Length: 289
Length: 174
Image 1 (cartoon, each protein chain N blue to C red):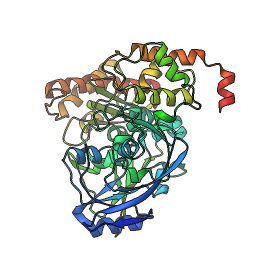
Image 2 (tube, each protein chain N blue to C red; image 1 turned 135 degrees about the vertical axis):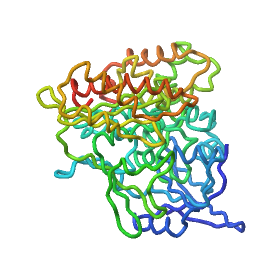
Image 3 (tube, chains in turn purple, brown; image 1 turned 90 degrees about the horizontal axis):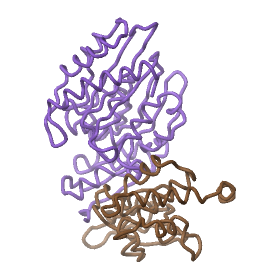
Image 4 (tube, each protein chain N blue to C red; image 1 turned 90 degrees about the vertical axis):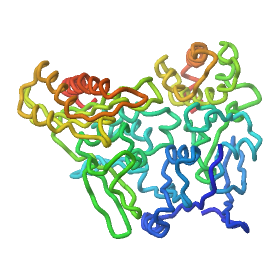
């Protein structure tokens, strides 16, 4: 399989990258790790005239803790950078684990966090856990930058609010009172499978009571969604097995999955019921795992 | 950036240098040239195989900066200036590498098409973690599909290398 011809640029700076994107407009695509775009180009699903590579933007390859801000993940960090990050392993192992459950080792060494988010595939594994942890993203364009909640990035399958001249530069997991988080992916194989559904929760528990619970679900709607009714239901309640089971039922009711090759809508709804309960249970009892 | 030549059709060609198995190679590639094709077609390193060509099967696995990656999913120009190890460079001398020996001795090879990629993934695991458990072995080769062996003897071969590696040797190799 060969790729069609295209022009290639690898700008030295963020500013040049955005200018290049503005100049070429819809003709250009951003090349980050390339695991998605190259597969699509080989399959004839995409045919950009220009690829603008981010490979020289070294500043976007770091994961660091910035005090007063939180864990800052450069958009060009690979999935294995997340898996191996000591900072994430210590603070939010759930994020490392979500990255670890993706694709294969070879792809995790190439694919990037930024690419995974910008592709906006509804079944992507990183959005749910990052949304549950209240992550924000920074978009930089020719006219300045904007910071927003990750959950506001997605507008539909493969669609985001990112403008043609903008790129996603960093993801921040803010410092937070949450006491535990967890992501459960249900795939049809242990490796190399897309999520049939993916459930992420982040909970703040105080003396056996939910101060706050955030639940984000992937592959349950055209975009990753927050299970807001379930969150509202849990707030202030005393934790019990019955409560968590009821939360699963509510989450299942407020999701809008589709039927596709990986599973029917009914099956997905039932998975959401069971996995929401399990993810909450784990986050309550085991911390950020 | 590397030197760019534009031909009469307006197609850009780029001069890149990659270090493969210890030697520097300079080649002129197009933007759409895939790394796997440079290795196979330009450098005659045909041990690296092409299977699915979509990043699923792992036949084209190489080490890029010591990390296993699918070379069918990487543009050659993106690898400019980087260090690559292919199956041809996995043995340090004219003797086979211990992983290669173990694959032969444990019947881990049947048709052989997945073997180069499989050995690269196994080697990368054993370099990082000389004594993996079975779960870690299976996870490390999850991106390498074998349709003959059922994986049992492959896992056995990798665990055998781990068993036969004494830790003194590991330390002196580092």
